[in-house]
Image (cartoon, rainbow, N blue to C red):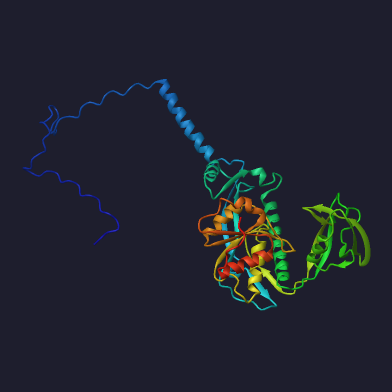
Length: 392
């Protein structure tokens, strides 16, 4: 029988009558019953000097200092690959995307949103040892903490802001996806405020509802964006608004940003969704999941199986016009995607500079600038026709 616990060795028996004593050179004189020769004398220990004491104390002190320094927080932020979620799948048994009011279709592949875990912010200190380990790890990055977090914000404020950004990204993704599929999404373009230093300051008021630009009705954010795309930055436009229920005509000088004409107002849009779309995900914040949410909604509402059984990951913000915006931590997201089985990754065009030279083995990257481009890329990957897809 084999025992789980090994048994202790048996103690040697004492010699019985007539047994031979082991001999080691005769009995030691003056030692009754002694067996063998006595052990030689140990040499005298060297005297303890002041220099030896100093060296010992210094060695111990240095070791203590190194140990303490290794666990003390340092002013750096560490970005590491975070978990990914399949927007076509479930989170704790609940579908991430649920649709009512339209037919839905079962996908075969995966569309995974990617995340980054950030240490070093309020409530999440980073030790010197952790920072050094991250510096030598190609999957992680280290940056001064003030370049990532504002010193005036605490953990609760940061989490609230990230959660608000996530809710906004889900709303934008829903509107962009439905319009991509041909739905009309009536929108009330409610002015939240005019931006100081622009032509709208002192002209457009909080609570105004924009209804037309240069005589063209605008009933959605996409309509407004399309009209302004035809306006030269700095040109004057006639803006029709409803103010306290009454129509008002305003003249506004547009402002320029990234070569485009803008009105210079913050808009808080209110949507009338033709399809009830709900997105459920816990403990994830920020705006960077917008692209993958939008693609997930398109896939669920489309009979064609866009992914073709392929696991595709990606990242990018999504605005109401379907434009894909850049995000932070894309290198970590590439590694996180590959770790969770993705073979393709959708990257925002404006992040391509950070992608080159940092793509894990087994992962292919295609760059996208709009939801329409991303949808076409997913369909091409699903068909296995990836030659010619733009890369970084």
